[in-house]
Length: 427
Image (cartoon, rainbow, N blue to C red; front, side, top):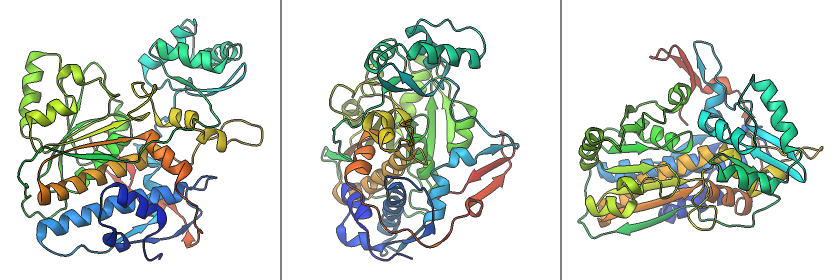
């Protein structure tokens, strides 16, 4: 068991605005060989779970009037949770993480990474490159490979993005630093005390407007800590059932078309009762529905509004769609993790997604604590690019020892409406 706060945990806890003297309450039980990588992924993963857990302990203590207890985090549990989508089984079936047209491809002058898991992204990728969407995926992958090999990586990136698809050039480094967490107090409403509850986030109402992994991991964490979480998706952009099976634990969910008057009235009622609103769409995309942070905070003084995006909040990439795999490719991570043959590599987990998810949950828990003391609303912003910057520039590797890692120790099974699930336990 490691004692005392390590550098990565101290950095993350400070980014959340936590009091330095509380950081030493986090300790880790080591597991040998977890999340092995050239980059310090193990240190990132355990620190994000550590500070999220500490934020939950702090809020629980604040609500009960007690002292903040010690937090003990097991690296084996963290490592299993960080690849929860790979451990998921539904009636014995293994879900597919990446579609055949998602991956690394050679360009004429380097490499590109595509993301085509969703049908609309797949169609836009093929259309941008002039490839008819005909035949099986194997034949299409061959045609895509042949086509990309004739084109420069930057041209592919610009052309596919212009068509609404997703492809980025693999870079040695973008040389861009993004903050890990951005938080500001908004307004001067009185401190808002939460009632005593049996769980850290008990009774807190959360509207979850997020998708894929990072946002849903954050809201799954809040739900399992007692929050009443309602995930809202558009019926025109449904999420995969497999993704819900992995990240939907403890939540309610609904489909609402915010462009329709009836559904909009329902949503307005939900918003009026919310303590927290979390959005995970690219910057500006929800503004047309009146859901920009400032509009939400003006309507609901004292609200906590948390935003998540891929590429950060400043610069030419800020308004673009993105996913963990693409940020790895564009930030220099894929280049650093490349194999001996030069083929770009990947982290041992979608660590930007999962890590940002736990940081986001921790930031919200800290905001709830801080609001009890100082009042006002909160506007929080995190990004996958911010977590990538932290991994690349600010975390140092530490010695890895401890017990041998067996992921089976951290798996469970349960019946569900989807079928019988095998799933990773929360860390």
